[in-house]
Length: 344
View 1 (cartoon, one colour):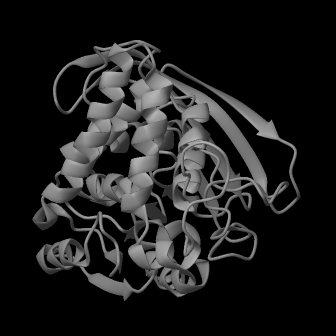
View 2: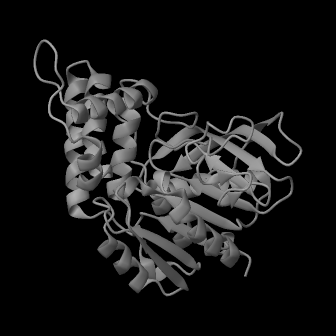
C-alpha cells in the first residue's frame, strides 16, 4: 500500500467529554488482496470520544458507516444502542474510530454509478485501510476492535494481518469464512441486482434484494410474533403486513446505498476467509444461536481453532443475525469483558 499523502481533519463542536474529529485520508494507490490496484483512494473516517482516551475501532455490517454514535444527537449512529456516553462501549472512557467501507456507498472510494469493473475487495483490504487511518492519526495500537457481522470479519482479518496493532478483538456474529448456504442466499440477491442493472433499474433491484435479505437477518419466531394477521383489506391485490414491512426496509436501503456498492460488499463477505491458526490476538466471540447467516456451529469451529485466548458467548435472540443491533442488554456484559481484557 502506498504511503498516505494527506488527511483533512475537521474538529466538530461537542461536549467537553467528547471530542469529535472527522476526515478524509488520501492514499496515492492501494494494492488489493485479490489482485489489481486502486489509484487515488479516499478513506472517510470519524474518531469520537473522551480526549486522549484509548481507541476502539467499531465496524458493523455492510450498511454501517463511520457514524457509529452521535453524542449531540443520540438518535443518530448505527450502533447508538451500544456505543456512547455511559453505554456498553462508553465514550467517556474510550475514543471510537469508525470508517466508511472501501467499495461501498459512503465517503470512502467505491464504484461509481454504472461502473462494472470495480475490483474485488477483501476483508484484508478493509483492514489495510483501517491501519492506514490509524497510522495517519498516530494510533500505533488499538485498545480494542468491536466488530459485528462484516465488521467482525474485518476484525479477524486485522488480527491475522497485524496482531501487534490490536489489544483485543470482539467479533459478534462473524466467523473465519462464509458458509455455503449464506453465500447462496447472497448470490441470489446479487443476481437480482445485476439483472435490474441490465434493465436500467438498479435501485429497484436493490430494493428487492434488501427485502429478501431481511428474511435471512431475522427469524421465524420474530415474524410469527410481529405479523400474525392475514392480508390487509383494500382494493386491488392482497397485500400482507410482512410484505409491507420487508419492502419498506428495501426502500430505505435503496434510498441511501448504490447498487454497485452493494454488489462489491456483498461479494466481499463471501470472499472472506482467514486462517484461525494465524490469529494470535486475544479474542472474544459472540454467537447467536438463532442466527441463520453466521451459525453458532461456524463460530464454535472458529473458537476451537484459535490458538490465542478465546472466550465464546452464545446468546439467544429472536432477532437472529440482527441481534448486534437489537440486543444491547444481552451484549453489554460481553463488551465489558472484552474491553477489560484489552487492558490486560
